[in-house]
Amino acid sequence: MDDCKVFDAWIGLTDVEYEGVFKWTNGSELSVLPPWAGGMPSNSGGNEHCVHTAATLVWNDIDCNELFGYTCEYL
Image 1 (cartoon, one colour):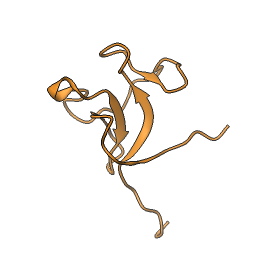
Image 2: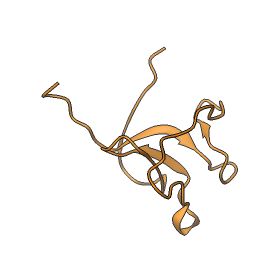
Image 3: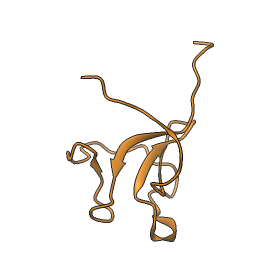
């Protein structure tokens, strides 16, 4: 585990279609209570519609134009 790096990453969740209604990029609805960071989601500035996980593994809504790595679901 020493080689494991934890970093901010997109998780494929967005409320770009309807503010406050979060859906996965495959169109499915969020069905679990998300581990939001304190005070999140905030939609700060009215432009935070994508969700990333921070190094602390909590979720945060942020501008979709930010540059992060991403996570993938293995099927």
